Amino acid sequence: MNTINGLPTHILLVHLVVVFVPLTALALIVCALSPAVARRAGLLLPVLAFVTLATVPLTSHFGEWLEGKVGSNELVRRHAELGDGLLPWAGGLFLLAVAVWWFTRTANTRRISTAVRIGAGVLCAVVAVGAVVDVYRIGDSGAKAAWQDALTGGSTEGGDGH
Image (spheres, helix red, strand yellow):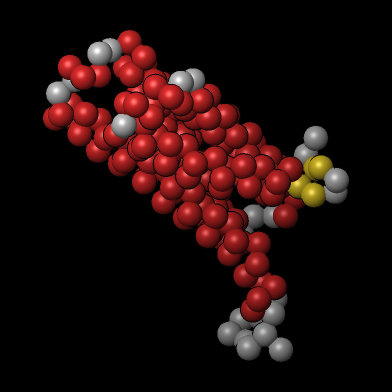
């Protein structure tokens, strides 16, 4: 099922990644900094992070199919290379989400030192920001790969697009 309603599946799944990665990143930071919010969120945080993690290789898989259909050029290759780097970030979001859920569920969070809580918050923030920045870079490169020729008037070297 490489297309849905005539559109490449990759293009549709990209929207899930673009929404779920920042949403998971934000939820992770909030839950890491506020055990009360993490307790109220319950399993929602690790489930959201798992869905986010699952969308990344699916999107990459369908992107590889699309790359074979549109042909590879420098912009498409750059987009594919950047896309391959998102899985570790999504994995980090998932692992940290499970850790935050586990510790707020099992530990007496009042007894966890402020330094440990701040350290965990900083680690979560670093991974969250890294994931969001990576999604931005991948999306930017994908947009350039998809629209560069249309906006510059084709493959005219140095032309004004007319």
